[in-house]
Length: 268
Ligand code: URA
Image (cartoon, rainbow, N blue to C red; front, side):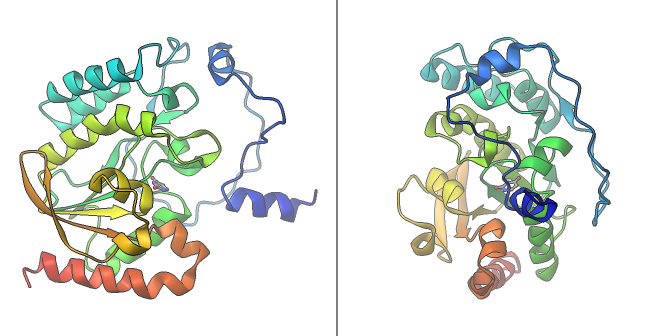
Protein backbone atom coordinates (compact mmCIF):
# COMPACT_ATOMS: atom_id res chain seq x y z
CA UNK A 1 0.00 0.00 0.00
CA UNK A 2 1.33 3.41 -0.83
CA UNK A 3 1.89 6.09 1.80
CA UNK A 4 -0.90 8.14 0.17
CA UNK A 5 -3.43 5.33 0.67
CA UNK A 6 -2.36 4.89 4.28
CA UNK A 7 -2.65 8.65 4.85
CA UNK A 8 -6.12 8.60 3.31
CA UNK A 9 -7.18 5.79 5.66
CA UNK A 10 -5.78 7.70 8.65
CA UNK A 11 -7.63 10.88 7.65
CA UNK A 12 -10.84 8.87 7.39
CA UNK A 13 -10.30 7.71 11.00
CA UNK A 14 -9.11 4.18 10.12
CA UNK A 15 -6.01 3.92 12.24
CA UNK A 16 -6.07 0.30 13.33
CA UNK A 17 -6.19 -2.96 11.41
CA UNK A 18 -9.23 -5.12 12.17
CA UNK A 19 -8.51 -8.80 11.60
CA UNK A 20 -10.85 -11.57 10.45
CA UNK A 21 -10.69 -13.28 13.85
CA UNK A 22 -12.31 -11.55 16.85
CA UNK A 23 -9.90 -10.03 19.40
CA UNK A 24 -10.41 -10.18 23.16
CA UNK A 25 -9.47 -6.53 23.88
CA UNK A 26 -9.82 -7.04 27.61
CA UNK A 27 -7.08 -9.70 27.49
CA UNK A 28 -4.98 -7.46 25.26
CA UNK A 29 -5.34 -4.46 27.59
CA UNK A 30 -4.30 -6.60 30.59
CA UNK A 31 -0.95 -7.36 28.93
CA UNK A 32 2.01 -5.10 29.70
CA UNK A 33 2.27 -2.32 27.10
CA UNK A 34 4.57 -2.88 24.11
CA UNK A 35 7.04 -0.15 23.18
CA UNK A 36 5.27 2.40 20.99
CA UNK A 37 6.26 2.29 17.30
CA UNK A 38 8.17 5.34 16.21
CA UNK A 39 6.19 7.63 13.95
CA UNK A 40 7.55 10.56 12.01
CA UNK A 41 6.51 13.73 13.82
CA UNK A 42 3.75 15.66 12.07
CA UNK A 43 3.42 19.39 12.64
CA UNK A 44 0.16 20.29 14.37
CA UNK A 45 -1.55 22.84 12.15
CA UNK A 46 -3.45 24.39 15.06
CA UNK A 47 -1.58 24.17 18.35
CA UNK A 48 -3.79 25.01 21.29
CA UNK A 49 -3.23 25.43 25.00
CA UNK A 50 -4.36 22.19 26.55
CA UNK A 51 -4.74 20.81 29.98
CA UNK A 52 -2.56 17.70 30.35
CA UNK A 53 -4.53 14.55 29.50
CA UNK A 54 -5.65 12.44 32.41
CA UNK A 55 -3.60 9.27 31.80
CA UNK A 56 -5.13 5.97 32.68
CA UNK A 57 -3.18 3.72 35.06
CA UNK A 58 -0.66 1.41 33.37
CA UNK A 59 -2.08 -1.69 35.01
CA UNK A 60 -5.81 -1.43 34.95
CA UNK A 61 -8.32 -3.55 36.76
CA UNK A 62 -10.41 -5.61 34.34
CA UNK A 63 -12.97 -3.03 33.21
CA UNK A 64 -16.72 -3.42 33.38
CA UNK A 65 -16.90 -6.60 35.42
CA UNK A 66 -20.12 -5.23 36.93
CA UNK A 67 -23.40 -5.78 35.09
CA UNK A 68 -24.57 -2.87 32.92
CA UNK A 69 -27.26 -1.99 35.49
CA UNK A 70 -24.73 -2.02 38.32
CA UNK A 71 -22.41 0.17 36.26
CA UNK A 72 -25.18 2.73 35.72
CA UNK A 73 -26.10 2.72 39.43
CA UNK A 74 -22.45 3.11 40.39
CA UNK A 75 -22.06 5.95 37.86
CA UNK A 76 -25.13 7.74 39.25
CA UNK A 77 -23.88 7.54 42.80
CA UNK A 78 -20.40 8.75 41.89
CA UNK A 79 -21.61 11.56 39.64
CA UNK A 80 -24.14 12.80 42.21
CA UNK A 81 -21.38 13.04 44.81
CA UNK A 82 -19.20 15.34 42.70
CA UNK A 83 -19.64 18.97 43.75
CA UNK A 84 -17.38 20.50 41.10
CA UNK A 85 -16.31 19.69 37.54
CA UNK A 86 -12.79 18.98 38.76
CA UNK A 87 -14.08 16.42 41.26
CA UNK A 88 -16.32 14.98 38.57
CA UNK A 89 -13.29 14.53 36.30
CA UNK A 90 -11.42 12.71 39.08
CA UNK A 91 -14.46 10.58 39.82
CA UNK A 92 -14.86 9.71 36.14
CA UNK A 93 -11.15 8.84 35.91
CA UNK A 94 -11.58 6.22 38.64
CA UNK A 95 -14.83 4.81 37.21
CA UNK A 96 -14.45 1.36 35.60
CA UNK A 97 -18.07 0.80 34.56
CA UNK A 98 -17.68 1.82 30.91
CA UNK A 99 -15.97 -0.90 28.83
CA UNK A 100 -14.41 1.72 26.54
CA UNK A 101 -11.94 2.63 29.25
CA UNK A 102 -10.12 -0.67 28.72
CA UNK A 103 -8.97 0.23 25.21
CA UNK A 104 -8.56 4.01 25.48
CA UNK A 105 -5.33 5.87 26.14
CA UNK A 106 -6.79 8.86 27.98
CA UNK A 107 -9.94 10.05 29.63
CA UNK A 108 -11.51 12.77 27.56
CA UNK A 109 -14.19 14.65 29.49
CA UNK A 110 -14.64 18.22 28.36
CA UNK A 111 -13.11 21.52 27.35
CA UNK A 112 -14.41 25.04 27.58
CA UNK A 113 -15.88 27.23 30.28
CA UNK A 114 -17.53 25.99 33.46
CA UNK A 115 -19.66 29.17 33.37
CA UNK A 116 -20.83 28.76 29.79
CA UNK A 117 -24.45 29.46 28.95
CA UNK A 118 -24.24 26.97 26.06
CA UNK A 119 -23.08 23.34 26.03
CA UNK A 120 -22.19 21.37 22.87
CA UNK A 121 -22.51 17.59 23.19
CA UNK A 122 -20.90 15.29 20.61
CA UNK A 123 -20.63 11.54 20.23
CA UNK A 124 -17.29 10.15 21.31
CA UNK A 125 -13.58 10.98 21.33
CA UNK A 126 -11.64 9.98 18.22
CA UNK A 127 -7.95 9.28 17.75
CA UNK A 128 -6.68 12.83 18.31
CA UNK A 129 -8.96 13.33 21.31
CA UNK A 130 -7.76 10.03 22.81
CA UNK A 131 -4.14 11.14 22.44
CA UNK A 132 -4.71 14.65 23.85
CA UNK A 133 -7.37 13.85 26.47
CA UNK A 134 -9.72 16.58 25.22
CA UNK A 135 -12.87 16.47 23.11
CA UNK A 136 -13.04 17.85 19.58
CA UNK A 137 -9.37 18.59 18.97
CA UNK A 138 -8.97 16.71 15.65
CA UNK A 139 -10.23 17.70 12.19
CA UNK A 140 -13.87 17.75 13.22
CA UNK A 141 -12.94 19.77 16.29
CA UNK A 142 -11.12 22.36 14.20
CA UNK A 143 -14.22 22.74 12.05
CA UNK A 144 -16.36 23.01 15.20
CA UNK A 145 -14.07 25.76 16.48
CA UNK A 146 -14.51 27.67 13.20
CA UNK A 147 -18.28 27.29 13.45
CA UNK A 148 -18.18 28.58 17.02
CA UNK A 149 -16.03 31.53 15.99
CA UNK A 150 -18.56 32.33 13.28
CA UNK A 151 -21.20 32.92 15.95
CA UNK A 152 -18.80 34.67 18.37
CA UNK A 153 -18.29 31.69 20.68
CA UNK A 154 -15.08 30.11 21.92
CA UNK A 155 -13.71 28.09 24.84
CA UNK A 156 -14.30 31.04 27.16
CA UNK A 157 -18.02 31.14 26.37
CA UNK A 158 -18.93 27.55 25.45
CA UNK A 159 -18.55 24.13 27.06
CA UNK A 160 -17.83 21.10 24.85
CA UNK A 161 -18.24 17.45 25.78
CA UNK A 162 -19.48 14.09 24.48
CA UNK A 163 -21.91 11.35 25.45
CA UNK A 164 -18.99 8.97 26.18
CA UNK A 165 -15.58 9.82 27.62
CA UNK A 166 -13.26 7.23 26.14
CA UNK A 167 -12.54 6.50 22.49
CA UNK A 168 -14.46 3.57 20.99
CA UNK A 169 -11.98 1.23 19.22
CA UNK A 170 -11.69 2.07 15.52
CA UNK A 171 -14.03 5.06 16.07
CA UNK A 172 -17.14 2.88 16.01
CA UNK A 173 -20.40 4.29 17.35
CA UNK A 174 -20.62 3.75 21.12
CA UNK A 175 -23.07 1.04 22.16
CA UNK A 176 -26.20 1.87 24.19
CA UNK A 177 -24.55 0.15 27.18
CA UNK A 178 -21.48 2.39 26.93
CA UNK A 179 -23.63 5.50 26.55
CA UNK A 180 -25.83 4.53 29.51
CA UNK A 181 -22.81 3.92 31.74
CA UNK A 182 -21.53 7.43 30.97
CA UNK A 183 -24.92 9.21 31.03
CA UNK A 184 -24.90 10.14 34.75
CA UNK A 185 -21.60 11.97 34.18
CA UNK A 186 -23.15 13.97 31.34
CA UNK A 187 -26.22 14.77 33.46
CA UNK A 188 -23.97 15.98 36.27
CA UNK A 189 -21.94 18.17 33.88
CA UNK A 190 -25.20 19.77 32.76
CA UNK A 191 -26.19 20.40 36.39
CA UNK A 192 -22.79 21.84 37.32
CA UNK A 193 -22.28 24.04 34.24
CA UNK A 194 -26.00 24.90 34.21
CA UNK A 195 -26.19 26.16 30.59
CA UNK A 196 -29.33 27.76 29.18
CA UNK A 197 -28.87 26.04 25.83
CA UNK A 198 -27.85 22.51 24.85
CA UNK A 199 -26.68 21.69 21.33
CA UNK A 200 -26.44 18.06 20.22
CA UNK A 201 -23.83 17.47 17.54
CA UNK A 202 -24.94 14.57 15.34
CA UNK A 203 -27.36 11.70 15.56
CA UNK A 204 -25.79 9.75 18.42
CA UNK A 205 -25.95 12.65 20.87
CA UNK A 206 -29.35 13.82 19.64
CA UNK A 207 -30.93 10.37 19.90
CA UNK A 208 -29.53 9.81 23.37
CA UNK A 209 -30.54 13.21 24.73
CA UNK A 210 -33.94 13.34 23.04
CA UNK A 211 -34.64 9.66 23.70
CA UNK A 212 -35.66 8.98 20.14
CA UNK A 213 -34.68 6.78 17.21
CA UNK A 214 -35.48 9.46 14.64
CA UNK A 215 -32.69 10.42 12.24
CA UNK A 216 -30.61 13.59 12.60
CA UNK A 217 -31.97 15.11 9.38
CA UNK A 218 -35.44 15.16 10.92
CA UNK A 219 -34.24 16.17 14.38
CA UNK A 220 -31.93 19.03 13.44
CA UNK A 221 -32.76 22.69 13.42
CA UNK A 222 -35.75 22.57 15.79
CA UNK A 223 -35.88 24.13 19.22
CA UNK A 224 -37.11 21.91 22.00
CA UNK A 225 -37.57 22.33 25.71
CA UNK A 226 -35.80 19.60 27.61
CA UNK A 227 -35.85 18.73 31.30
CA UNK A 228 -32.11 18.30 31.90
CA UNK A 229 -30.58 18.31 35.33
CA UNK A 230 -32.70 20.34 37.70
CA UNK A 231 -34.44 22.54 35.15
CA UNK A 232 -35.83 22.96 31.67
CA UNK A 233 -33.43 24.09 28.99
CA UNK A 234 -33.65 24.98 25.32
CA UNK A 235 -32.10 22.34 23.12
CA UNK A 236 -31.30 21.95 19.44
CA UNK A 237 -29.75 19.12 17.43
CA UNK A 238 -27.53 19.95 14.48
CA UNK A 239 -25.21 18.13 12.10
CA UNK A 240 -21.95 16.69 13.38
CA UNK A 241 -18.84 18.52 12.10
CA UNK A 242 -17.37 15.17 10.94
CA UNK A 243 -20.45 14.72 8.74
CA UNK A 244 -19.93 18.23 7.38
CA UNK A 245 -16.34 17.37 6.48
CA UNK A 246 -17.64 14.44 4.44
CA UNK A 247 -20.63 16.36 3.06
CA UNK A 248 -19.62 20.01 2.62
CA UNK A 249 -22.89 20.83 0.86
CA UNK A 250 -24.70 20.23 4.19
CA UNK A 251 -22.81 23.14 5.78
CA UNK A 252 -25.59 25.53 4.74
CA UNK A 253 -28.00 23.58 7.01
CA UNK A 254 -25.56 23.72 9.91
CA UNK A 255 -25.04 27.42 9.30
CA UNK A 256 -28.81 27.95 9.51
CA UNK A 257 -28.82 26.10 12.86
CA UNK A 258 -25.85 28.05 14.18
CA UNK A 259 -27.50 31.37 13.27
CA UNK A 260 -30.60 30.26 15.20
CA UNK A 261 -28.36 29.38 18.14
CA UNK A 262 -26.75 32.85 18.05
CA UNK A 263 -30.18 34.47 18.01
CA UNK A 264 -31.27 32.38 20.99
CA UNK A 265 -28.15 33.40 22.92
CA UNK A 266 -28.90 37.03 22.11
CA UNK A 267 -32.40 36.53 23.48
CA UNK A 268 -34.00 37.16 20.11
N1 URA B 1 -16.31 13.57 17.36
C1 URA B 1 -17.05 13.66 18.50
O1 URA B 1 -18.25 13.42 18.49
N2 URA B 1 -16.43 14.04 19.60
C2 URA B 1 -15.15 14.33 19.65
O2 URA B 1 -14.66 14.69 20.72
C3 URA B 1 -14.40 14.24 18.47
C4 URA B 1 -15.00 13.86 17.33
